[in-house]
Length: 91
Image 1 (cartoon, helix red, strand yellow):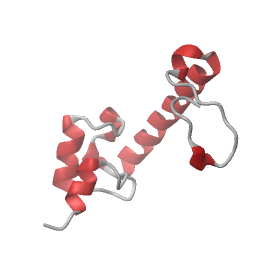
Image 2 (cartoon, one colour):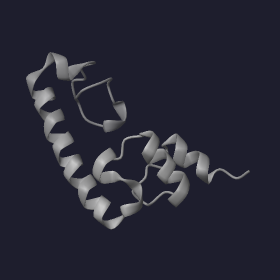
Image 3 (cartoon, helix red, strand yellow):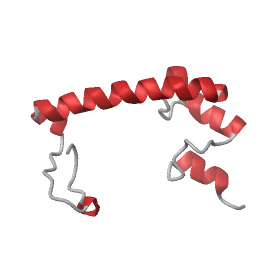
Image 4 (cartoon, rainbow, N blue to C red):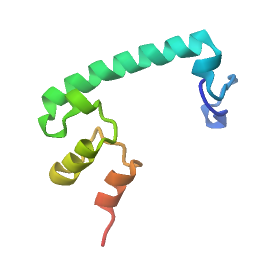
């Protein structure tokens, strides 16, 4: 696993900080994960055209943040993502 230990996982695992730079299999898994995520974001972009997911891939770019402000979050936005949390806080 790339990063810090994750006790909540509930199973034994090895955690490597900067694992993608230290372990070929962790680096390869990162490439596969990013490729799959990019494909998923293209599919979501077709369903939710207001967010620019086909270009920002869901990363917190200035454009994506502006679109969240304009259109509001979807069920696909992480509620723990600060810009989404701030939209849902009562004033």
